[in-house]
Image 1 (cartoon, rainbow, N blue to C red):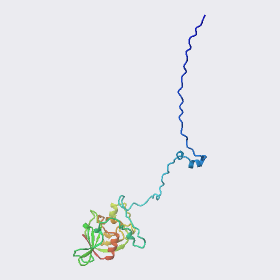
Image 2: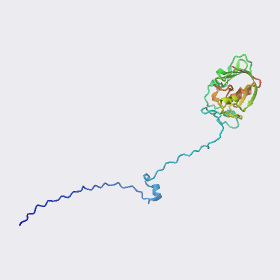
Image 3: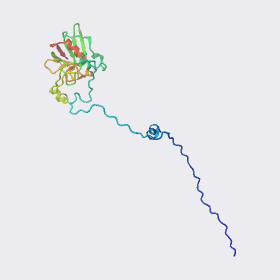
Image 4: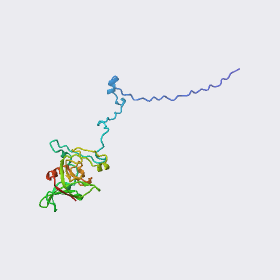
Length: 247
């Protein structure tokens, strides 16, 4: 019996896609042999980065138990110019570069008054102090005076003169401002400044100031304050017994 062979069916094998090889760019290498030299002079991109340490505080250590400040926070503090030990230290307080209305600088002016020469007349509303001179003239200075509620007027005589006076705030002032020191020796930081002229038996004085920017304003507790250079000049021109008229 004849056997008829069926035609062979070619079995197709699955065809794999061609392999695609992506060429990697050659890596740059320095021929430095690795190690520390390779780290220093090799590829900078491979170096690790480190954050800089935070800056260290270089100021003075904090002080504990310090006395309360002389002035409340927010008020300007006195500014000084060191002109050297050979000069009057009062001049270190008065900053020539601080803005000041020229009318409050010392000057000779015409001034009509019935008071005799040598009298001090203080015009508190206008913030001027006049030292009466002959022939209708006067030497005029700018002053600071009492703030609202602390203004006054009257006639007194200079009862004492002091250079670099110490300061003991009266009890009434300490009740209003308990942060004030109970006593302060004379010196550039003292609010009475370089000189003081005491008025009779009152607590009021004509004195210098470590706050020259207050001249021309009403900011005191009743005293008449002047720039230190001005009170030094006035101090030399008047003596104990000088009549003082406060208007």
